Image (cartoon, rainbow, N blue to C red; front, side, top):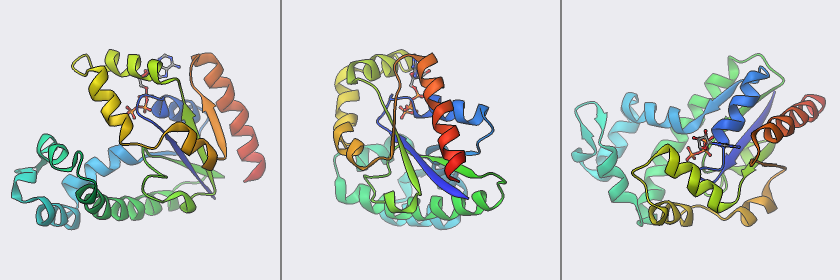
Length: 195
Ligand code: ATP
């Protein structure tokens, strides 16, 4: 079974692309959703986060997202420590999930792959791209409370597309939805041929 990483900057359309693969019967693991769940269900992860950020990181069983993001935003060493707790847990959860799938390849969707140096884990990496202005418009539409400045600040925390393009195996340009869908179909056929 091949492991395919699916990544892209915020608002590029990772989840949209993932849905097209799912519709073709490809098992997709959403790392961001699973990480959020593990932060509230895994005893090991919770203890690690409390030790790193203090008891205030949780309100009862729930992660105090605002507090956690405020603590790690613009604090790279602390963010790296948090990633060092969450990512290994996601990795083992993904591996257990992948074992249960019966398919020539599975996709792991993750906002950050290169940023955490996990590119060697995958057989192939798909990068979703879109012009920055389009990405900002999409996020503003999805989340009317956000501002272009805040979105750009989050973008600056991720690698640029040109850095990621150089290290990716396949690029999906997600502007027109129908074109994106046909790029997915074409890529699905090549991946099946390779698997
Ligand atoms: P994030 O990392 O912020 O979660 P993402 O990369 O997973 O984002 P999506 O959630 O797929 O991106 O897309 C962001 C928003 O843009 C969604 O509301 C989605 O419906 C919309 N969108 C994505 N692709 C297109 C497209 N080609 N045309 C129009 N709207 C799109």
